[in-house]
Amino acid sequence: MFLRPIALLFVLSFGAFADSATVLVLQFHNSSQYPDLNWVGESVSETLKDSLGAGNQIVFSRDARAEALRQLSLRPGADLTKASLLRLGQSLGANYVSYGTYEAKLPPGDSDLKHSSIQISAHLIDLRKLHDGPDLSEAGRLVDLSRLEQHLAWQILHYLSPGSNLPLDKFLAPNRLTRVDAEESYIRGLLSSSPEKRQKWFLQALALDNQFASPVFELGKLALERKEYRQAITWLQRISPADPRYAEARFKMGLAAYRAVDYVSAGNYFREIAKAFPLNEVYNNLAAAEDQLRQPNAIDDFQRALEGDPNDATYLFNLGMALLQAGRFDEAASRLQAVLTRTPDDAEARNLLDRARRRDFIPSGTKPPVPPRLKADFDPAAFQQLKALVQSKTS
Image 1 (cartoon, rainbow, N blue to C red):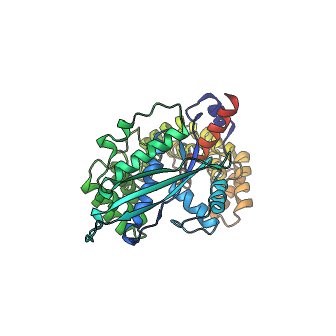
Image 2 (image 1 turned 90 degrees about the horizontal axis):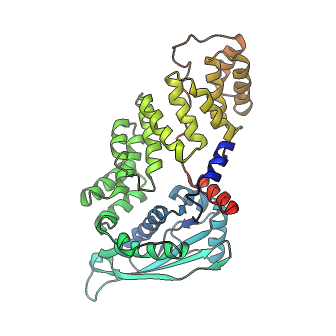
Image 3 (image 1 turned 90 degrees about the vertical axis):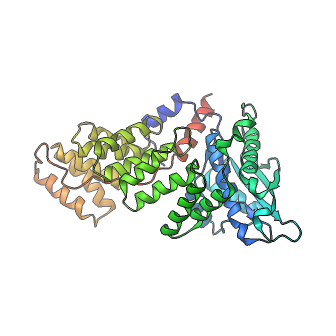
């Protein structure tokens, strides 16, 4: 992730992540004899990830974790060796790795897993000091899984930020706890490969607990993938500002509004995010909305995106097209030639380059000759890491 100079100034001036740690939370390993409880390991991981994120820690996404596991040829949910855990955490630049196991037992003569008891064992590795953190555990009934997970998250946060005021009653408040059947449905949705099955599980989770924000967020993402843009916005606007996924939800609302040809709303969503996360992809998409509205700020915002990553073909293409529309033909040709140097088969870039060389003027008020190219992914973890690093060195 490249950040332009203005973002670095922002990092220096804003200390929201100064006391944050960067944490990789792994799926917990099922040590019980019941494979039907494999979903619990991902449930523990998801709850810890969300609660640590809400507690001002920088937590890697499931996608980042999955990609790191893939690159190291490690199996998700496996009981990894210490060496593998160290390599995995270091590959992402994490300060801590959180991992663990769980064991479930049924009362004698009972075969219904919902009556089982569960013990969760959690461990932390401090990668900065290369030593183990505390061994933490929670034990109770499976039906109280959410309460056990939240208490575990509270313990971990106390270790990561020992001077923080973290009232336990807030972690165990009713609005923080989720019914175990709703939690199971949500996790089974996350683990499903079929979009149809994921939607079914997420809707079931929400029907069981209509205050459960996680399936709402995932339903919004699914609607966006299905090109149901208005429905995506309806789902995602339910994510509250206190939720660690709020910025990503607003980013996806911007994508949905843009695809629904509501460029004013799209620009407003991206502009809101840029205030807290001045990332290249945010400014690129903001500029795309501005370009569709023929607003003069588009060139400046495309330029900001490109300054953060001068080799990105999308940013070069968009800026080249915007300069062409402004009649700045030589500058446009330079950017579009750079696109073709990187991607020689880009027919749209070649067509625009020919127009720039012919000095083919585009009349004011007309639509862009081709649509600007959007960035679909938003992951603020890299920005948060850099912000915490710079702030720690200047404090």
